[in-house]
Image (cartoon, rainbow, N blue to C red):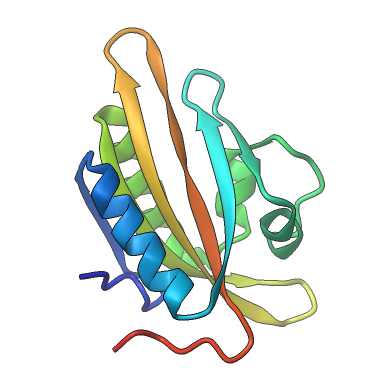
Length: 141
C-alpha cells in the first residue's frame, strides 16, 4: 500500500505499471489534483503540467532536474535526488512526497509518482504524475 503521503517519504520498486496505477488511484481517490509529467533521460529535460509549473514557481517548460529540486524544501532534496538517481539507473516504479515552499512563505505538499524505462546504452525516459492535495483532500489512513 502507498505510504508516500508523509512529506520526506519515498519508495522505489522494480518497474511495474500496476504499482504506478495503484499509487495514482490512491491519491486520486483521496481528492488529490493529478498533473502529468515526463522526462527524457538523455537531455534531462522535464516537461511538467501547468499546475505543477506554477506551484514550483518555475517559468520555463521544459525545465531541468536542478530547477525542480531547488523548489523543494532543503531537507527533502537528498531523498528526491537519490530516488531519481536510482530511477535512471534501472527501469523502476517510484514515488516520493515533499514540501514545496513558496517565496511568500506558503507551503504545499507535492507527491510524485513515476515510472522509468531505461534502455542500456540508449537512454530512456521517466514519466508520471505530480499530485497536490485538493481542497478537502484527506490523507489515506
